[in-house]
Amino acid sequence: MSLIDYAVIGLLIITSTVMGTVLILLGHFVRPRKPNPAKLQPYESGVPDVSPPRGRFTPRFYLVALLFVVFDVEAIFLYPWAVAFDALALYGYVQAALFVGILLLGLLYEWRKGALEWV
Image (cartoon, rainbow, N blue to C red):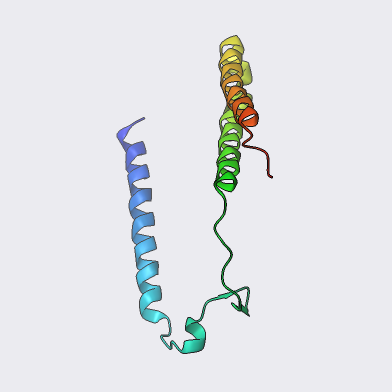
């Protein structure tokens, strides 16, 4: 990569930062400011809150969400490998198989520990 390529990336970062800052400041100065008690009340989907909020989620919910994120990231990492499969040949296949194998070991571990049971 030449210096011009880096300059284009730097210009893009500077432009997006300046544009984001200008738009946020513009919205701050242009928007109407007429707060009243009705506007300051919390609501969900246009319905006023009539009961206290639900209790906290169990840690099991967060564990399942984290596992979803891990396997979602796995799919993101496998996509470029699948696109370049011909160029990577056997080495790429072995590396991808190791990657999926390690993730499968983690999934089996979580399964044996009962992390995927929703009871």
